[in-house]
Length: 165
Image 1 (tube, rainbow, N blue to C red):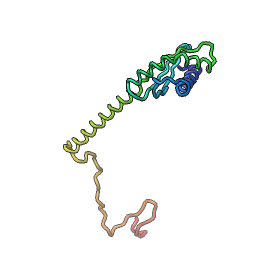
Image 2: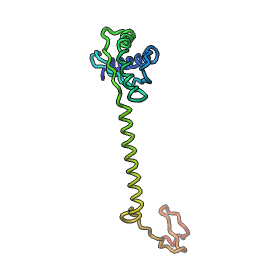
Image 3: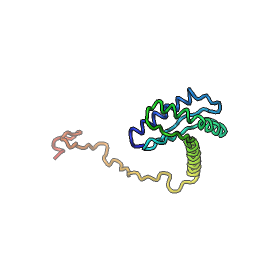
Image 4: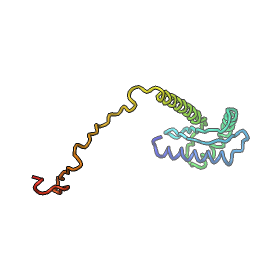
């Protein structure tokens, strides 16, 4: 869908289908449906409509049956609103995004638990010095308290002119 025209058609189809499902389709089998994406082929002959349903697998199956039975009405409304000579055929596909997101959340949770276990083991047994980073050696001041040093800019810190030479 790199063609801007095809992308506009897909966006418009998504809006039309969502409005139809919300306002005009009164099938009791239709659950809480969200149109997530629409993909149109480059020749605008076919449109794949991805949707999600909030609920159980049974509600997903009944919603799929309701969408399949309302496909003709939805396609005629898409044709009417798009005003195209050839209207794309519609295919409703349940979106796998929620399942993928759930699986990803489970993987991330497992990784977090493993990180906590490693951190707990690291506190118990640490190999090496407690502070492995090298620090610069601190040299104590070799000057006595009564000695003073002249600065590079010519000002002094208590020296006389004869002392500088």
